[in-house]
Image (cartoon, rainbow over all chains, first blue to last red; front, side, top):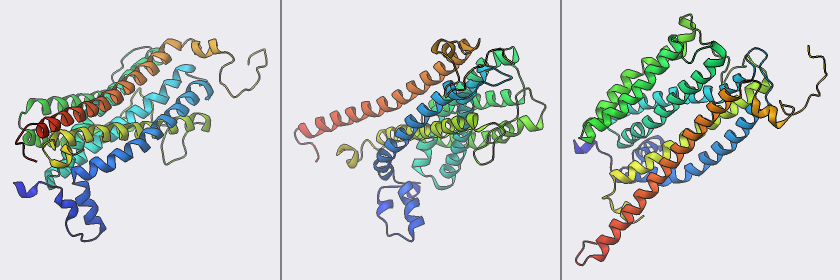
Length: 259
Length: 73
């Protein structure tokens, strides 16, 4: 099976068009380590700036909600963590497919690096939702299709994390995680459309990155900044963790020794 | 409508103590934000510290390899 494993020579092979070159480069741990080290700073800087502005704006400048009072300000961290947790799961599923089809090492590392981030993001979304629910719904936890499907996503992340630790052979562990991540993708449309398919207590979405939102700009803009800021934070941490995994798995390679 | 006319300002609150109180929702708002940014900070720290630690280990390993006599170059 060694023919399917990417090596650094993949990047130096004679290019047949830029797309193929990029594909080979993406498969090269060394290329990712170098370029990721530069991308980190861009994403990290954007994350700090956007989250600072968005959070101060949401906490201190955005007007009070006439129905919910100030508890609605929790939305500015609750919605971004929930969105990123779901996007992260889609990334896990996509990485799982790439791993199973092309046996790309980087896809395995992306899946491994993304799981703990998604785990914490879904835990945060549930926690901040729960804290918001206490003054708004009158209970720390209310079971409806949205909250339960999000809880299932958290359990899937925990299962993915445990599964990798439970299987000693790295290759088998990677494949098992890929299968679980792909199967778990079924849950994503259920989370997204739960508020429309079922009569949930959880409100329907009033926010979209591409559509005109059903809330005033003074509330929408800080939320948009925080959503983009959380995505940048996710990218920063994901790249940092993937670079660590590259070093760990390539620690015998000469380019790592010469770092 | 409120009897006293409040001046429209840039800030949503009239004073810093009003800001901290968040109406009567201060506990919930600050708990949610505190928890979120604590976890974010911890995750970022853990991710970067893990990378730095591994770099040090690999460098130490490489030094051991080169300093021992007869080590393959």
